[in-house]
Amino acid sequence: MNIPLNAWLKANGRKQALPSDKWYLDFASLLLPPVKHSALFKHSSTDIQEKAIIALTLYFQDAIAQKGGWKHFTRLYRSRYGTPLPFYQTGSTYADDEINPEDVALVLWTLLAYPARRQPDDYQLFNPEDERLSVLTGTAYDLMDASFEEAPVNETPSATWVRGTEELLTESTPLPPVIPTADMNRNALRCLEHTGGHPLLYFADYPELYRFFTGVLGWEGKPSALLPDLADKREFVIFANAKGMLLAHDVAAYFCDGHNPFYNPQRATEEGYQLFCQPGRCPFDLLKLGMTTGLLPDVRFPFPNGKNLLQNNWDFVARYYLGEYYEGQ
Image (cartoon, rainbow, N blue to C red):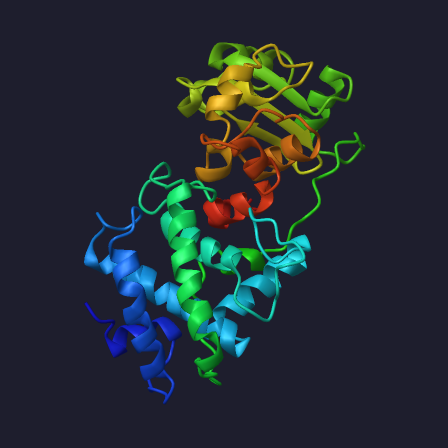
């Protein structure tokens, strides 16, 4: 399998070939055996193997030219978080203007971990510290290092190609205030009055929520007025704030809050990562409140070192997996 020129041009976001393209396609052929026979991709389709080879070659091209999609990603990431990459420690040996094993590892991770495509729960997790990834990273990096001095500079930058780049463009916004004011949404104000100012309220099931709607908020007891589509849901959380009253279901077990009788640390540990990966699973303002106020201390990815990887990179993970639901209304 050789990488077709048209596939390479498409990945670069251009239609015209450049003199340097042949060199990079020849380099891509060097990546073919280690990718094809790696534990990560040996059972994958030819199409997926080709995409992996192209991504690694794009990275090498961009690192040599110091422009293009890879540099766009790292500049955006650094502007957001102060470091060039998520997950990987970039110490004194990391060089922005050279190739780095950590870069290669992240490129591979973006191919193996991906957001939901058709259904909210069909996202794919992958451990960025997986040993199989480390092995292929080392092999690919060594091939790049051996060819570094002879690699040509491509003056035409590649288009955006790193998964997660567009999501880094979304601006973070402050959480809405929770201090009661005279002009606050009436429902939110009543919630805060009911709790003595605590912004979160917890309910076991719909009947309990129904009683709160009618008894405390004063809603009319008509089924059509009381969110009947939530009748089969459980473990509700209300977040009362200046925007209004935000309601989430099937999430109360994850919040370590002295006001929450439904907190379940085991479930938070085993299931809490879903809030960051499944679009619509939890409203983002509630997720952000939980992370910035220490109410989600147990959430972790379901693999070794998963707590550090998620807790230290949660905002990027949410951007990467939630897409338009990140900071979405």
